[in-house]
Amino acid sequence: MYAGSEDAWHWATEDRVPFFCITFSRDKTPAEVITAYGADAQQAALLTHDQSCEIYPDSVGGTLLRAGALNNWAFCFEERDPEGFKPGVLRRLSRDHETIQVVCGGDGMNTVERIQAGRLTERFEPGVSISPEGTGPYSLHQEVRRFIAAQPRDVSGLQAALCVVGRRIGAVLDATTLSGPLLTAFIDDAHREPHTANPVSSEHTQGSVGRLLGPVQPNPDQS
Figure: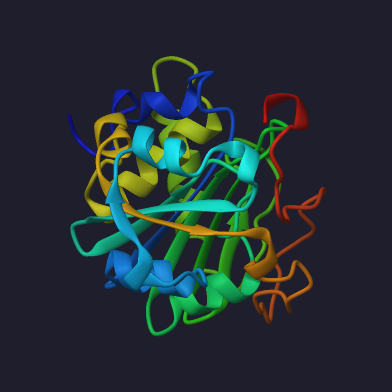
């Protein structure tokens, strides 16, 4: 199953995963990613999904970080109130390199961002005919549009975006990986980065996106 296959990312459209935030950071280790999120990597442990949910249930609040490696990219997966969309986190993740973020919003809005060396290169809503934000080039946005146009049947913008990201990083983040042991850390609400941090910088914006592509919160009915 190749990285650009729809089936490789089927878990992302299942009802059991109504919301998620994933970052993919080039030339970083899982421990470095955990640190960039503001957690103590020395306190992180290899835990399966079930183990992490047992130790840190939803009722305790906070955010649960699960990080791993795919080729020369490190990823961090969140399925609770996310930390990964915050500007300070994205600046640290992308420092000297590149970070790609995909958010599946519980409100039905999905977003893709690419940040290079702390600067927003592109931000868009996959499958929606609205110009992207950022300094450009808008390579992911263009690839997602081409991918959707080339499909023999309808494909969601979210699936298309993940397939394109998979091709970019040369790997698939599949359900088996997500359920298996990953470097896991927890940040309680008292130690999370404020929502008021300065935004990721962008000197030029191609056009108005029509609606805010900011932090997407889980749907309260699905949390």
